[in-house]
Image (cartoon, rainbow over all chains, first blue to last red; front, side, top):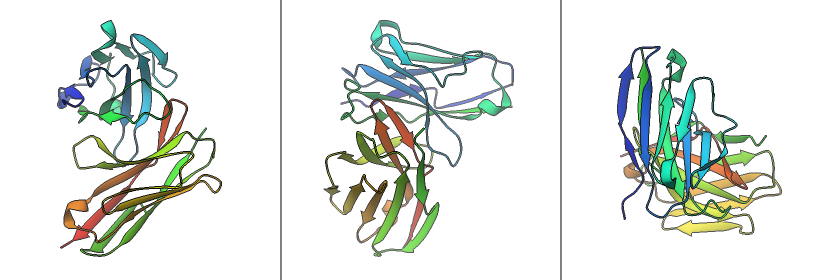
Length: 115
Length: 110
């Protein structure tokens, strides 16, 4: 079974440029999560989807961040414009139905460097 | 808001040693607690998941315990090996949100 796929794995951009990350969850997983992980810290939730619906985006900086999950499968996270402080690893995870007992499966992440 | 703390932040041990990693959380109203492993430049891999009604889970050389009332969990690694070197994170789940600790970076020396 294929795991959570993310691309690109690495991205280097100049500040004020836009950037987008893509995630393909495990087949059949209805719930998808985007996390931000700063160096030496644990992941912090940005947004959670149940199918196509964003059910928790309270931690997403909506002035510059946006996300979508068309057709309830793949998802894209966008930053526009990027700032120096956005340099971090962006992790995508999925779970079967988002029930409290479900475990999350993580992708390898996208490491973003903003210069 | 749930806060998760992991102690120590880093640990270096010789191969073969048994070790304990600690995780504490502030709100005992959790659904489950999960231990993850993260290798450099990679995502998180689930090691053990303990439901709120359970006290411990075991997988091979790993044993995780949960004491909800005191807000503590431990991850016990028996007979450590160099391949165990990684960062270990614990995460508690309340309904549908995970709260992660900052991790313990483990180095097992040959």
